[in-house]
Image (cartoon, rainbow, N blue to C red; front, side):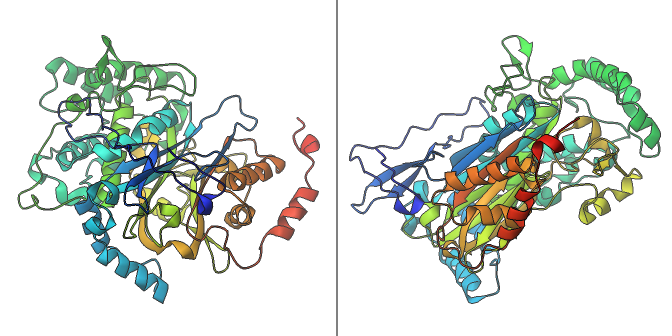
Length: 541
């Protein structure tokens, strides 16, 4: 049905008169009845008045570029996901009413006005107008399990979360103890039933807590809390750093029975939402929706909120918290962690067109960790960062974590580590460090832009960001003929510089693709860096 030729600006679609919308599958859980809309294609109106499908491919004839490299590591922990999702149009409309333009310029003001005037009916109806394209970049640590799970399931959770999940999710987060004991929901606070929140004593949560848990399970959890409490007290920093070997492993053994009480049973065993367990990149998979009824108690929001809808920031934050809870509830998943940088693009043109042809685009970015998202400005070719690095030496992160009484330690390579162990202060997983402030609450960026003002958006992992500046990344992409060529050029240069970590680059074109002006600001620097590289000499041991 789809014929794609050349770059995104030259994509041609052939409309089949018999094309019909794919029938959405129903969610597995009986408590989640809304339809799934995630698809591998974007629908758009054709000149003849019908609909056409544009496949989301990263090939030479595709609509975005994706390139990955294992580097010198024995395995690949980076993953990426691309999907077309559906968000209720009422939710999108109210979300744009609260946004301000990215710039105070005339172009920024016109983008804001376009958001205010957006009409889903004129865009093509709810089905087309509610399409949001998801681009996710994930960098796992401590194994591939978490990043693979996020690749397969995080977008589904984002699409399926509902406001009656908020209160129980906040209560679970409070029960992590320590840093989270007084957590009231953050951006989700208006949806929380404060009268249903229970006070939390010192000690981390282990699996399902609350009045529905059996008494025996509660006793096991209490015993587990006593066993690990001395590991995570802020005043016992030395103890925390000196118990990362055998004692911590034995503690996890104590926690597993309690965690399994809250995990989802698949095929007669507690699999925590995953039906597979191996060291392959496909691990773990399975239905992300199974077991939500067991994990989350549905509690209606406060009175007076019946007519309210979630904002994009609230939906993203809830999806991040729910997914992190799923990870912690599974012994197969709770073995490491992962960063996540997700960009969601929504066309505001009327009638609806794909994001790369759209003059007005809603850009929403949710981010934890040290993966990175940038845009390239057409007028001067400069990099526009949409995320920050969640590292212990970042000023805002250091301020957030200061109250824990622990601190940052610089390792022998000069890298800052929180509690002497973690490079990232926000991440999925890493449950042993939740109590000391490792959070999955995402940093959110939501703006409406003019697509013609920006050439492309790029997401990449720290294997790239660790050896290249933001401007170098953007300059390597600006003259590429196709996004796939741009992504490959970034990875090629990173490898030339001796990048040893896993590397991923995903290039998403915008309407300004191929029209970037200004000078290549880092060309001479890149040539100088290339001339001084001797990989054989530098990598000798």
